Image (cartoon, rainbow, N blue to C red; front, side):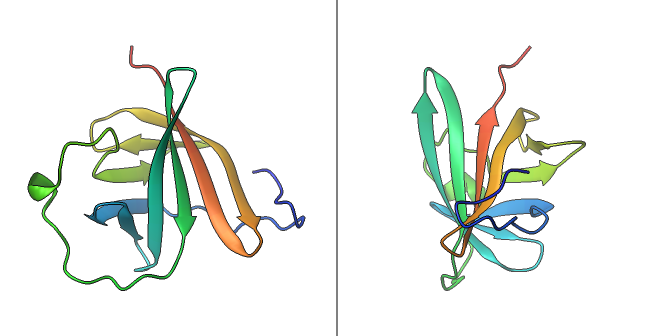
Length: 111
């Protein structure tokens, strides 16, 4: 893991992230994460920040609009996540930036 601008290492990354509603995911400890997709040179990335938001009712994944982002990420070996569509995402960074925990994931090309 890299170090943040303040020199703080973030804690261990979440083991699982499940979609609750558009742009909001929840981890195994009921912490909420805001997720935004980005594209850089044709590569899909997900910027994920731990921000406290009211959980509210979970939306069934089948009722969510189509998205390039998965319904779930599961931490796997090394610095990678596997998503609900069996795609692999590398952890580009996991930092504390001005006190906010942030993950930046990069989807690897499918074989």
